[in-house]
Structures are given as structure tokens and as C-alpha cells.
Length: 455
Image 1 (cartoon, rainbow, N blue to C red):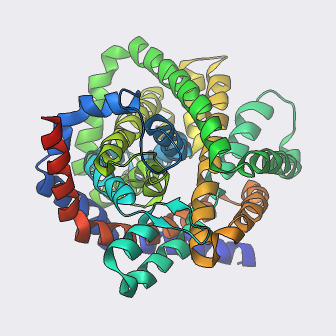
Image 2: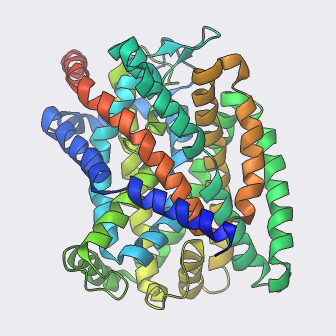
Image 3: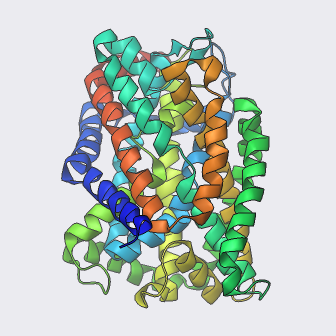
């Protein structure tokens, strides 16, 4: 076994160990606790949430971004390869039943985001430059005190790895190589390594050009690109689902049945469907990981509950809408049954089969936008983590690491990238969920006051 294979096997084992039953219990159990504690009260104010998103209530108070721009920035981090490649990986490893467990993570994730993102505004702190910041590390230090600071440091150290763009760039380069350049005959298979290197370099330049401008430039890019790409992707998906409308009930039944029987071709066992579905669902909507709290912590508001209500729409759009559409398209096409493709290649094959000629091109545009905006947003998260650890005046060093890792990710294997990032994200979830569970009663106390004011 070569040294590269040894490293890959270690990273895969790390990801699998990190996402053991104990973490699934923490995330789903914590989400269930939030559901029980809230009695689903925030769900009654979804109309109010939409009014906040679309600017009915002008933003006031500290912070940098409007409710709409914070949601778009957060969605730029969640709507990405998790919705396209992640769904395919879940089906490949866990069978169609994995999608059911992705739905379950989204349903509890709605309430998880309400609590974590309300806390991110309720307990904001100041960085070493005196600038207001939000996120689990500040929630922990401001609300729980100095003795919990090691938990905040643990979150940030894990965040430095979890926020690297390895999965997004790896799958973006793979999709451009296999879905477009190889298929069109513009390069040969022997040119793959050189293509990866050149594409990685070009993407590194693009990423550096945007992230060097800070949060405002990232938000500007996200607020323009994410809605357009989402509409394009959802529009294409809706067209394919309408054309194949009569088969939708059949595949929905397959998803539910396979979740509890594990009898599909690739599913193998109920445990595989549950593990990979929850893992990919959390990776997709990020509920409970803490990244979402860092984005929403930048909201310009003096009402923490408002930002919690805005954040609730993340899992609804990301997982219940976009991931479900992707899953149905993959299942309808039949490409999942061959076992020949995985990740973004499987999704691209499904689109091309159902939409010959333009399917792969259309998907390629969406993949590019989703992947690159996710990288932009993750750079902001990584900067905040490094700023907390060594000072805001030095957090820009993370941008250099980000750019270097773009090139590395373009050359690395998919399995290694999934193991590394999954493991780091799992570590981020521990301090996020633990602190949110401890502080959840304070969120509900603030929510009751806010909802009483609404009448």
C-alpha cells in the first residue's frame, strides 16, 4: 500500500468514526429536544419569517447584513455539492432509503437552526479589533463563561479544517472534466492530471479575487448568484419531474420502504441507509454544525429571534426542496442501479439521460455557481475561526491556506476528501449542539417575549 493510499484509508476511517451512532444521537436527539421544548411554536410564524426575509421590517441594530443577505450567504454555504454530489453519494452508499433520513435531518434541522441562529445573535461578542461577531465560539464564551472557552477553541480548530473547500473543489473539477471536457472530446483521459492542475490554478485565482474583499464582497456575490442558480436548477428539476410525474409516487414509496427494509440494490442494510442519509443530510443543510450560526450571526438586527426565524428556511430550501428533486431525478434515470458512477458523475449522468444534449451543460452551470459560492462563504467561516484563535488582525492568513487547498483538492481523491471534511464537521457539531442544548431555555424565553409582542 502506497503512502497516498494509507493517508486515504486513515481519512476515511476518521470520517466513519466521527459519524458514529453517538454523533447521530447528539444531532438528531438534540433536534428532537428542540422540537419538544418549542412545541413547534416557531412554525406558526413562517409567514412572518418570509416578511423578514423580503424586507418588510427594516434592519436595525448591530451587524453587517440584512436578513435576506444573511440567508443568501448561509445558503451559499449550504446549497452546493451536498445537494448535487452529496445526494448521489448517499444513494450510492446507503440506497434510496438514505433520502428518507435526509428528510428527517431537515425536519429537526429547521428547529435546530432556529435555536442555534437565535443564540448566534443573542450572544455576540467582539473580536480583537472590537468588531461585533457571532457564532458558536462567541455563544460559548459570552453565555457560558471562561471555563467553557476550551470548547470554543475546539470548535474553531475543527472549523479550520471543516471549512476547507476540499469536497466542493474536488467535485467541481471532476464534473468539468468528465461532464464537459471529456464528453466533448476537448481532452483525452491521459490529460486528466494536467487538466486538474490547470483548473485548480484558475479556480484558486478566482477564489482569491473574491474572498480577499471580505464579507461584503462575498455577500454581494452570493446574493446575486445563489438565487439565479437555484431558480435555474429547481426550474430544470421541476420540468423533469413534471415530464415524469406519473412515476413520482413509485419512487417516493421506494425511498420510504428502503429506509426501513434496506432491500435496494445498493442499500444493503437499514443502518447504512440511516447513517449515510443523516451524514449527507447534515452535510447538506449544516443544521447543528455551527457554520450556519456564523453566517446568521452577522445579521443587522437587535432582535435575535428574528434571525432564528429567517434561518429556519435554510433546511426547507436546501434539503426538502433541492435534495429531494435531485434524488428523484437520479432514481428516475436508473443510473444509480449500475454502480458504475458516484458523486457528481452520477447526477450528471441522470440529467443527461433525462434531458439529452443540454442536461449536462445545464447541470455544469449550476455546479459551478453552487460550488464556488460555497467556497466563498466557507472562507468567511474559516477566517472567523482563525480570528478567534490568533486575533482578527491575522485572520486573513486563512485566505492563503484556502487558495492553496483549492489546488490540492483538485488533485486529491473523492473518498479522502469526504473523510477529512466529514470528520472535521462532526467535531464542529459537538460544541455547537452541547452549548445550544444548555442554552435552549433562554431561546424559548426570548421567543415568547417576541411572539407576544407580535400578538
